[in-house]
Amino acid sequence: MKAWVLENICDLQTEKKPLVMIDVSLPEPGEHEVRIRILCCGVCHTELDEIEGRTPPASFPMTLGHQVVGLIDKNGPGSRRFKAGDRVGVAWIYSVCGECEDCLAGRENLCTYFKGTGRDANGGYAEYMIVNEKFAYLIPKIFTDAQAAPLLCAGAIGYRSLNLTGLINGQTLGLSGFGASGHLVLKMATFLFPDSKIQVFARNKTEQEFAKSLGAYWAGDFNETPPIKAHAIIDTTPVWNTIMQSLLNLHAGGRLIINAIRKEDVDKESLLAINYSQHLWLEKEIKSVANIVREDVERFLELAASIPIVSEVEIYAFDKANEAIHDLKHKHVKGAKVLVMP
Ligand SMILES: [Zn+2]
Ligand SMILES: [Zn+2]
Image: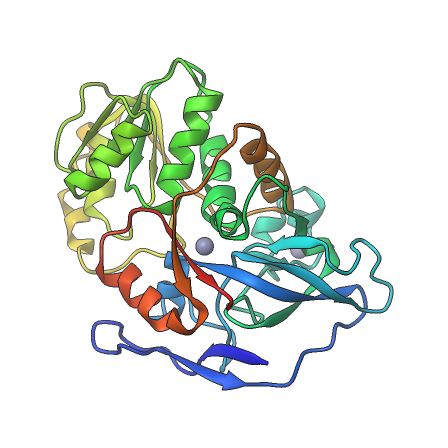
């Protein structure tokens, strides 16, 4: 089968083709595993973090990709959850130990042995992949393959972020950054919190207009002052100056959720301008969101199907993986990028 692999970490400012297409033998599903014939795979900002070494693969070569939609191709021994031909998804959570304090308490996202799909095990930029059947999810019929892909990461982690805000209907929500996760969270939030006002910070007019067209009460640039101080803000940007702005824009007692697996170092010194009374005083909180649990994926897929949330996607042919990575790094994103099999 054909698979894209990352052979080493590299700098995407200079490297145009970080991934290499190779031929590998078809993987065989082990006990309780399934083999999935991949139909498409979403392209996520986390892939940039993996390629550039902020959260590097556990080993090389590694096939990236953790928003996988495909058909069950073969059940391994003892695997009975799905039948051949079922359409399933695989998300960022590839496996956990299942035995530690965090796993037993329902916080499997925090498990020390958490494995991320496409980082610690081969993921979806390939024709086939293997996963334990407990870490695959039936995809609701309402979605096309490509529409379902971004729901598995951007959607599921967006859902977790929104839950972590503790927002109550009527309170104001801010979204700092408006990529794939941001637009899904906006759709979710307008459904779950119909009386809440949602303020979106985005870097260009196109994104701001897009946010307004999806129901944002206000949209502006990161350095603009929004009309209302928010009770919660979700940050999905890769940088730090937005964190400082968000803290300023929080209401007393407000909570900032940072939804980023890693932050880039480019503007880290902007943190030195922190002013305790303006940025943190009055019980402002900061909390990061780490990984997802299976329940996030299951519940979010259900919610997305009932609203329904239909992702805006930009399709790339499977052989254009490097172009998709390049565009995600260097161009403004409207919807979510998805690699589709021929
Ligand atoms: Zn992702
Ligand atoms: Zn564990």
